[in-house]
Length: 458
Image (cartoon, rainbow, N blue to C red; front, side, top):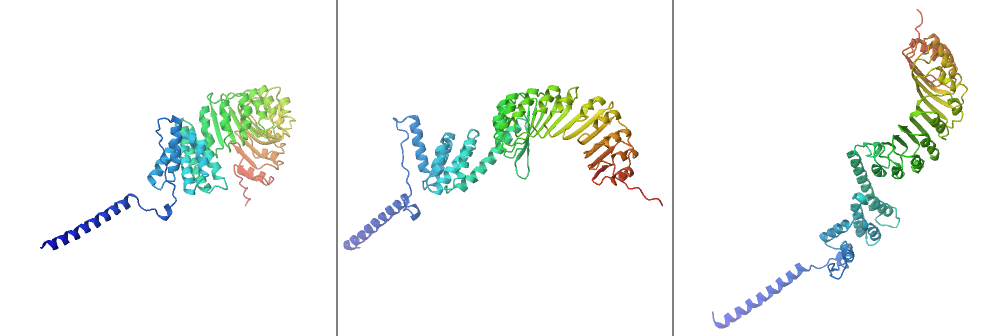
């Protein structure tokens, strides 16, 4: 190759290499700083803040880092946004007011990020209530674009609260019953400590609660006031004082109380300060002092299961305010029913058992009493007692067990036109006798033995 051709070839090679160099440089620049798409134009860039400035205090550094995290929630890179979410969530419940405020600003994506962080923080035990309250406010704000997202996260947080509360109570030996289809807690039994009551506010469908032992005191009443549907409360020898009993009025839908063990006359008197109470069941011994206190209660129903009449019972019962009185009596004699004679209690429901010394003579005290339900189990009555029982015109349910009454004595019940249920077990009454009585009592629907019409003679 001559010198002129060699020079020309070298020139072409140099131009080619220069072109390739510029092309490579352009490609490198493109990879380093890709052009913004139309959706990224105007995106907020992160302002790098030096949170390690020596002059800044600890709180200032924290505030600077939080501000940067809030800014990074709008960052175009997913990893940066996730790091910001984690940083804000780790800041804890003290940041919840700021998160709620910030959620009301910015675009929907930013709002949803703030809502999710509030929910995440709320899954920590000490922050549940505060986070739930924030989400509740956001979910009902008509001007908030992400109200639906707030409502969704609120429901998730509430389910988490319920699950956590159930687990903690069960670990403590408390019995928790749930509806299998809805997952809602409706009954909690054997709760023994005040601090356990704090979990109950998460059970919006809780209807029945049993508190037991001296570890339950007046301090439990305030948490109970936050249980919206609690209606039935059972106390078993608790440490709740009469002052605490008065505060049961703070439970909004509380209507029925049952008591076992220690419950003094002072406790009973305190119940007069609970206006929404309609049913009181005392599964504890009731003397004259307790009876006087109970008689003054303006409730619809009183239940005594360990009631022992005294010479003062008739006078005390004349002042009874309850419209319905249910009594369980055992080991009584004829004179123990004397107080019922002429008594004007609107509706009486009496169960008498294990009273062999109660005979036909004692039944005369029941004549014309407003007894709706009467059960006589293992008493000393005979067929003759049916004469007195036949005078109880308002009687609707009658049960007699282990007594020598017979078909012939049933005729005395033919005037009981309100009777709907008659159960005679361990007697001489037959199905034919019941059939004869049924012809006279059109409202009688439940019978034992069952009515068997007498077969016509051939």
